[in-house]
Length: 220
Image (cartoon, rainbow, N blue to C red; front, side):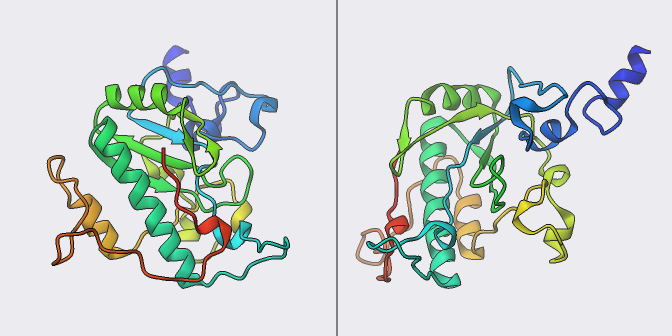
């Protein structure tokens, strides 16, 4: 019996533990879920809840009307956000194996940032310290996550451009970063974390663009 229960733990056959929380580290039912959310006491992965704000969903002008943001501007805003969070967390807490950001619209997934560190000790320290921090005017809510294999958490239909549930899908819709940024961040060893410099020896300046309020960059 014990062997059977172990084999179905965290699957849809498990009537006690929530399979969605086990796979995704989040559940649309939250505390009202009829099944248990077994929060890990140790993990390589942390989640920063609702940290990323897509400016296409939130941008407003001074009079409160919606501010149009192009796809190019959104990608640039996202790359800036991703680089800043990745770089600062790696410099402060330790080597990052993988970082993913949800572009879902459901309350339990919107803007969630999942960071998988190489060492569990680094993840534990990050959670302890980040919960006392603010980013871009909002309090940071960090916790250890059961997610270690993002292939099981992602919506395969979304990756193929075929998800019919849109932003309210219960599986992760992970927003990709640009290829250049991916090479820059994941090709950067633990001893080479300083940002790239121009021929003048200074950090490249951010390209000028029309800004809405949510284009402001945050700091931990």
